[in-house]
Length: 103
Image (cartoon, rainbow, N blue to C red; front, side, top):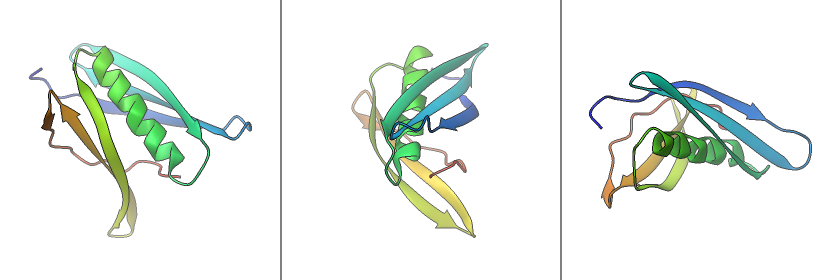
């Protein structure tokens, strides 16, 4: 794909059953692709679920063979960021960072 996807929204829900559910919307070309992922509600779980949901949304948009390699919470200039590493077709992708809820 040559167009760049754009993060539209990240919603975090904690339904009270020791899970965190993240819903992500990504705009790509003329459509918005939505996906969700859940994780056990531990420190960093929301960020991991959001990254997994983003990968699923990108796969739905036609980005094949994506693999979530990992993520890291970082603080830069007093703001929290989540940096995500993804592999596509066996090659690491350049990731643009975004300020996301990491808790």
